[in-house]
Length: 502
Image (cartoon, rainbow, N blue to C red; front, side):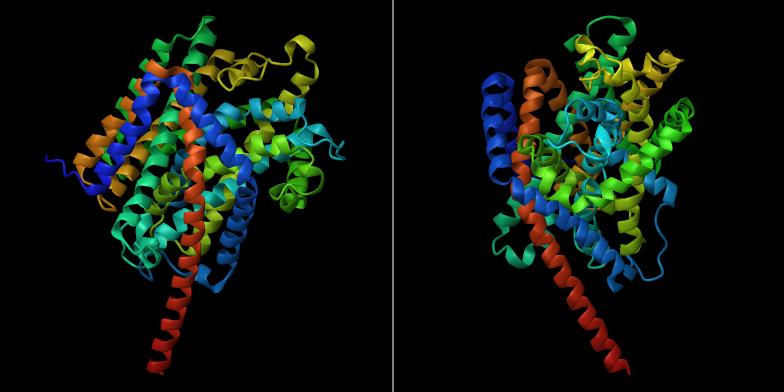
């Protein structure tokens, strides 16, 4: 098995060394530098992120409701490659499954205790908290993924072009080196995002194990968990989409539904339905105002910068990896079914998820004294502390740890597959040598970051995500424009053919 070092692969390796080696030896200095860069980007280009998020939602929904929504991503009569349940499970697992487990309690309670707005809102603090949880993890988040994924899928299956961002931007890229820079940017955002997620996810798994044992979580345990996750993800990626990723994704959904239905039964039905209905009402009613931080939703600019703009930059940074993976598994679907499936189905599942966990958590938090305000403040153990208020605490915690493992494995093996596609010249079936290389490289970098740099280096990589997301945001806007142009040209060509045939 001979490894072919394509130019793109060489550039990516150089960038990895340039960014990661200084972080291993000088983590504090790198963290300070990247933190300043991220703060500058968010402060100067915050409005761009807000308008981009709303614009992508409008773009996706407008496309779905237009006549172009009938276009099939593949041959005219081709059926979807994967059934709806499996397809949904795969995109949900790769997109944000582990994050929802980490944030299910911690994020709504933070909003509940620290109101996102200054004005007292008519819906009350609990509904406002759900409203913002829906907003940050809902339709806009998936619009970032859907926009990139849809453009990639169209050029792959309609134009038979390689799965590379530079291919879409080819009409405006005059020199080949600019195309390489675009592709390197997409690969590097994926690498930084995955390394940070593996590190933080491994930390939460270690935190859960330590919480159950009543001990502190050592760094060695976190590194050991990252190694195990890397090994399993590598084996899964090598087995391909049909076996490893598909089976793990279905397992994720089953485990998540078990956890969800358990807490539905633990909730009182009336407040649960009331919170969900009111949360959705205010979410959709004030969606544009929240998206653009207008009126009362812009009264707290620090919150908008720290949460909304940060999230938009984070979802944007993950768009190359998640979007391309969604494109890879969406052959045979129409543009309309693609948009509704990616944008709406996971979002409504997320709305229900936050409501089911936050509704009892609000009641618990309302009884806290001043000394207990930080009980649910940490993403590493907030969920596990929440479980102590319910029966079967050990079983719930064990199931959550298992789901964290499987979600992280699914994200990692999906990333191995997608990065291999990118560095193998956009090949939809990347060579085994590329999967071998990235299957070893990604977990190894994550373990090194945990072991040497600890949380400081992982946070530095999160900061780098914000920085690299900015140029990618402008690139995504250009991709959408060129995609619409391609649709228009295709429509004109189809009409000419129809005219000549008649």
